[in-house]
Length: 297
Image (cartoon, rainbow, N blue to C red; front, side):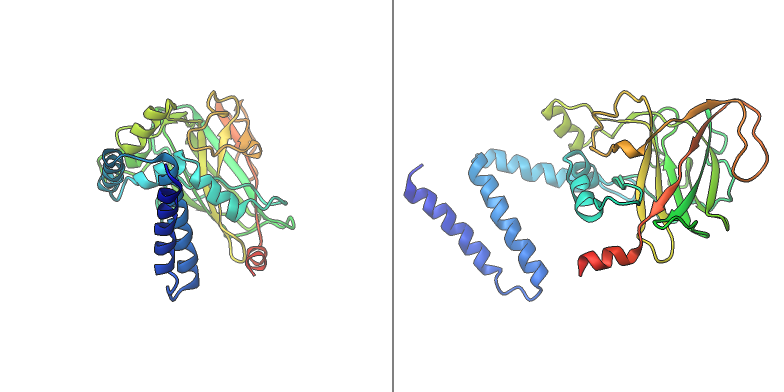
């Protein structure tokens, strides 16, 4: 390519950026100008044919078309390209005493079924019994009463309730409140590693890249308490074969835990358990909301 042609390509980029210079919102102006610069740089590097660019537009069109109230293909794309975890790292990669975060994923439901501590979110599903308990604390160590603990996970076949056609079918998810000592507890079944949905554009992209679609087994948590930053995270099953190659890059060492095989457990609250089960004890630490506000300021 001649120097004249290259100069003309950059001139076009500069012209588009200049057209955005009068955007009234400074953040919108900054974001759109950066988007144009990086998108144009990508196109100059890859130099797509018109047919290739049409394929890219069709790919994004199909991504939007497959989205509905129970499926979010754009989140799958963001997750599998590592963008979700990069955004998470930018916003929450703070270190310190608080529990590490990871991706929300496409299967979260706002306002899930309300449960009492000790309830079974498996609701009679087949699988290896799992008892989960823990304490929610502030960074200073004090327990947080009345914190909201949302949980959701796959069944023993690696399926989420949202992957079924019944819009009223909810299983293996629930909302708990911590007690006066910050404790929560529930029964479930052991989750299983699973492939993300591969029947849409995200799956096609993985196949084209020669990547597998699997996530290691885990339980999702989203925890809120007054005066603290919401926490979105998973707890992963130690020993899972996909821990080092999670398709969405979400595994962190501190979030891997031993789901112990037991025949007896004395819970933090309530009667003893005397039957075969798996057991997870995991305590969560929330960051003070003022810490994020101070960092933003």
